[in-house]
Length: 153
Image 1: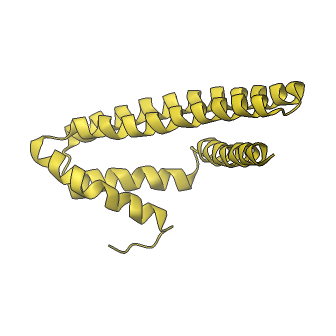
Image 2: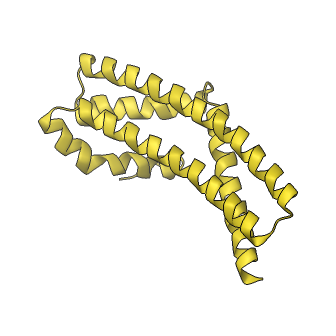
Image 3: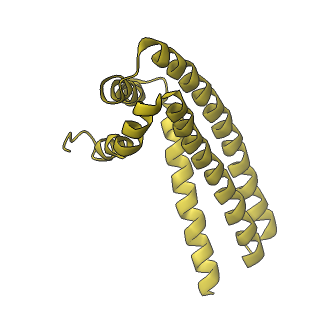
């Protein structure tokens, strides 16, 4: 009984995470996401010291990453629907919950991997001096983002 409650909790958490990710990607063409993209560009130019050639490479890398993520999210939405339909067919048994949780975790893991790979791709654009600065300051940009607009260091 405790195991099935835990699995249901995991599924609910994964569902919420997937919905949040889908909502972010659904609104990708709207201003809040543009500001986030602008923040990374500003960071790369001002903090890391990217020149115009590096920014051009970043722009094409970013566009490719966005296209991949949109495709991944589209597949994820389809996969989520299939998981829930299968759960209903299987009657929400413990084994069905295990399978559903695993499938949903795999989708989330794939999205996180793509995000981290993109950061690695951005890092590869840096020269030797920039790599060191990128490695030691990137987390600050994400801290600023997570504070929802508060610009403290």
